[in-house]
Image (cartoon, rainbow, N blue to C red; front, side):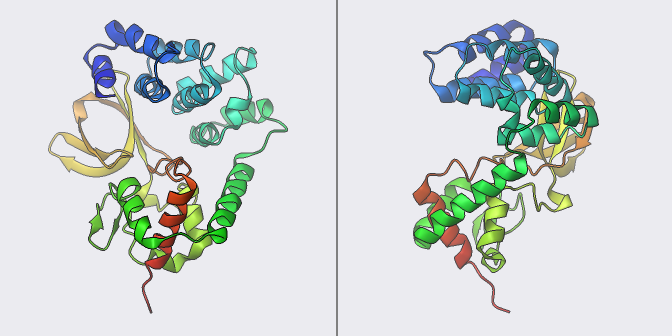
Length: 282
């Protein structure tokens, strides 16, 4: 992953074809190809967007969804994705995928909203998908409530890079002491639909650089001529202000919406048990 990202950072024009070949190569493993899509998706330049669009023709549905997520993460890519779907060169079902729909909505464009609505008519809405997911996970937990002691390890792996409970974790995002007081329904919302109840102070910021690279994360202040941005993994990125050409607030949480959904059933139940156990008495 680091090598793929470094190639594009060194010279996007020279190395884009190498990374594109990795993305389209069926002999590469899925995780590597998703990494390639994510690395290309950080750039707003036409060549990068062209590479993602071109790959949609030859990849599996799972990978096509990951590519669509990258395209939908900026207005230029979102408009290109809508165009190829309108032309019948990609499936409209991509727009109904939850992670894609979230990012499309984040563009705050009435034109994009109307076009997406027309192309997804009759498909489950984002709200319906999230409601079904929450209900499914609730039934899963209530059928077997899990082990909070094992949930500590899941929290440490999946959550502690950004969140803190007691002495465990980092203070990048909101601290979660007493989160159990929220109850199961609210915790399910917060983990499965993190942008639903996010505090304005924790909204993601989108930064476009001169290179065309797009960065998203939680703004954490400044150090002289550097802007500090915490990414979805809790890493602090230092950005020279001179390289920034655009900065705007997103309406999404920096927390990846697939973080909890990617956990297997046992890990999810154990994490819920651990979070619910962390209560503060009045």
